[in-house]
Amino acid sequence: MHLHFALPFMTNSYLIAPGPSGPAVLIDPGAFDLGLLEMVENNGYYIRSILVTRPDRPSTDGIRTVLKIYDAQIYTAARRIDDFPCKTVAGGESFDLHGMSVEVLGAQAYSRDAVMFKVDNLLFTGDILTAGSVGKAGNPYGAALLAAELKERFRSLDDNTLVFPGSGPPSTLEAEKKFNSHLQISS
Image 1: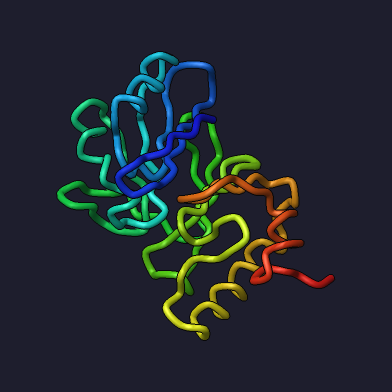
Image 2: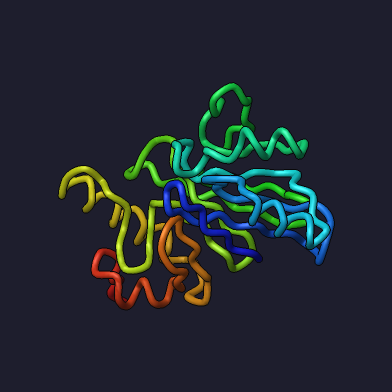
């Protein structure tokens, strides 16, 4: 797994692949700059799929450039991103990408078009969850609904699951359950 920090929106993008080279998956391409291109090309990857946690600018600004270079399918909760058709996914679905099993976790309390992607023990949350906090929900009631939804979603997941947010540092579900005041789960 490779991390790329995109300066225009100060967001994280991630590159995962089933092997040391070959087909790869790009998650939340907030920008597709020279650094990310070199990361892909220098490792012998070819972007075949793009996972988007939420179809808004901080997560999608690099898509147009990616698709000029690579023939990739976009997976997200929306039908289209700009002019590009997407494979629509929803919480509860699972599918295979290049030999990797992808599980989609919904986050309706955050936004109807927001999803998280779990690949093995890696959880890509976008802005739904960041280390120590949950996404901005607009008001205290919305924040409480989001926290309740995330607690329920995370209850059955392994504590060793690594959390990769749209911005900020990575975390683990164990740390979030223990230290994120929004997600503390009592036994």
